[in-house]
Each structure stands twice: as C-alpha cells, then as structure tokens.
Image 1 (cartoon, helix red, strand yellow):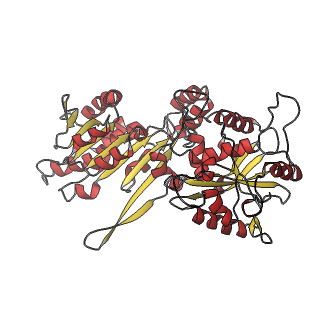
Image 2 (cartoon, rainbow, N blue to C red):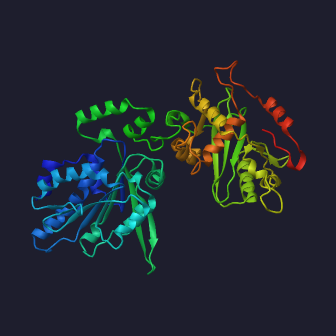
Image 3 (cartoon, rainbow, N blue to C red):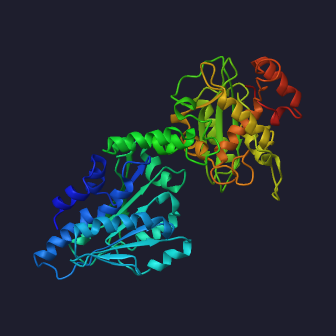
Length: 487
C-alpha cells in the first residue's frame, strides 16, 4: 500500500482538499456550500495524515502494531450508512488486508491502525467515549452536534506514541448553520483561512498555543465539471435561502431562517457612510442585565428608509453604567445637547424599564434619565412589528432599502438577525429566545416608524422633524427631570 498508488486510483484531492489535509491547526473546519467533496475529504483525512505513515513504520519494523485510532462521528448512526458503504469500496482497495467489524463499526488495517464510526445522538451519549484514546477525531456535519458534545469528546484526543503524538488531529466538515459552529469557527474571521490562536497557561507556568481555522469550500472547488453543472442546476432551482447556504456557502442566511427570503446580505448590509445632517435619528433599547442589553441607533432618510448605523452591546451592566456609556458615545458623536446636558435623541425601549421589580429606588428609566438618556415606551405587538419589518425589507425600489444596517457597525445584528429561526408553532413569526435581542430592537424601530402598506391609500407615511416633535410632545406626561430629549 502506498499513498501515491491509492490516491491516484481512488482519491485525487482537489486543491481545497489538499489544503485541508496539509493544514496543521489543532482544529480544522472544512465548511460552507454543498458539493465540494467535504465528506470524502473527512473520510480520507486519517488515511492520508496518519495511516500511510503508520503502515510504512510497520513495514520497516519500527512498530509491531500501530496504536493509531481514528473515529468518525455523525449525530445519528443511520446518517453514516453511505459513508460506511464508501469506506468498503475504498479501504479494501487501499489495503486488501483491512478487516471490518460490523458489530463495532470499525476497520482494522494490516498495520493495526483502526478507524471507527460512531454517533452521539443525545447529550449523555458523549460519556460512551469516556477514557477512550483517539489519535484522529472527525465530525461530519458538525452543525448537528451540540458544542458540549464536541468539546467533551475532543478531550479524548491523545496518544502515548511519540510519533502519533505530533500528528493528532481534530477535523470537521459541515454546511452553514447559524449556531455555535459559526460563532466558534467562522465569526472571528468570516473570510476564512485565518489561523485563530490562543495561549493556554499550564500548571508548570509555561504556555502552549492552540489554534483553529475555517477553510471555506464551495461547489466550484469540486474538480468534476459535469457534477458541478448538474448539482448547480439542482440548487439553483431551490428557494433563495437554500441557494445562499448550499450553493454559495453563506453562513448568515440558513435553511429554516425566518428572514431567509427577505434579507439579502449585499443589499441590506451596507458599507458605512456618513449620515447627512438633515436625517432624523433615534435609538432603541432592548434591556437586559444577565442577558444582553442592546442599544441600536437608526437614521431616517428623506424617503423614510431606516438605516441602523450603530449598535452597542452590554452585559452585566446596571442602568447607571449603561447610561454613562451611552452619554460618552453620544457626546463623541455630536448627538448631545450640551446646553441642556442631555441626549439629543430619544426612542423606544422595552416597557420593563419603567417597572418597579421588587426593588427600592428609581426605575431603570429614571436612572438613565439622571444620566441624560431618555426613552419612550415601545409598542409591543410582535405580529404587527414583523409585518412592518417585512414591508421594509421587501421595499428595495429606491436608492436604499426600507431597512438596512451598516455591516461593520452592526456585527451582532449581522450575526444573529438573518439566521433567526421560524416559530415551530406559527410559521408567521420568528422563534423566541436565544440571540433575538438585536431583532427585538429592529422590531421596536419599525413600529416606532410604522409605515402604511403600499397597497393601502397614499404613499408611505413620513414624519418630518417638526411633526415628529409634535407627536412626541402629545405623549409627554412629565417634563423637566424626566422629560424627553429631542430628535
């Protein structure tokens, strides 16, 4: 058995697969679109990176039996059937002496090297691999697994063999998903091919570096032109969110996302630009302490389109701390009324900030007012808010869409909103919970600047600065210390 003969006959890696096999990061994700040969690369990785060398050591008499042991995971075992069938076609050709144990779902090669297929359906199944020792761990469709499964089983990566110890590998392949996989591998460097490192302090006082990397791959990376053409034809006929995820490898518009058909990344997420002085501005807040507190700033152009030009994210900060930070941000941005020593902006916030929740003292709203930050009560009508947001997203007839975000100023919005799932009990609504704080701000903003559907009478309703001030003054109950700032 030689690497050259086996590869030429059975597996000739495309450039992106070669990049995957030769990468030396501690954790490697080959991810993105469907069709570039991710699963095949994952199956062959232990063969190329460990088995060939172990077989050569065995042939030279350096070892009597390899202790190398690879394991290849899927979330549910039936999903491994095609992979196992492919392994039978390839592994017997690579090594005629290889044996397959159907009870243990494991190959044993002539030199003793083992490759096993496993699954972790439920979170407690991770303990099935307790105390095991693996030199190679592969995760197929990583997005299906929970992060705790991934992290726990990866602790089994080890070897007492000094040669294998230098070749230990954790590799994964997956299609796009808006979960922890994206946050861990993709979000820190969206373009991919960037080595992410962190230093680990050991008990002896020394440091060791750990690294991970995302290698993007799309259908274009598959060298089979006829396969590419036919598979592209199949994917081009699918809904937009499926095309974006599986054909183009977009991690931020994923199958099942509520806004998959409406949010177009290169339309709704725009490059930063200077907001003209005549545009109305306001801000929105979704309060949280243990969860995220999100404050987003919006500008309204002359056609009543909204653009979110800034987001601020806080965690475990009390109302005074958030208010003080917003004061500094707005002062630096020229959004502060120095004469009145308060913000020039206002806008809607969740009604909970006016509630007394078993505490003595001022409410969150009153505490922020002491810092010169004023709020208005938001309109909490989620179905109506969703309808408003969808109207704005679909309105792309003018110079700007009805709702857009400055991408580099709103990274968490970019990460979360396009991949919010659909409510399993009501397909007309997005799912609640999780990272929906940034979406909630957008919904408050859309209700604050509600528009009349174009199918109804008249054009979109507009609120010039004077009229907006008039509207706000009608709502004021108290002035002075707890009055509202102006737009």
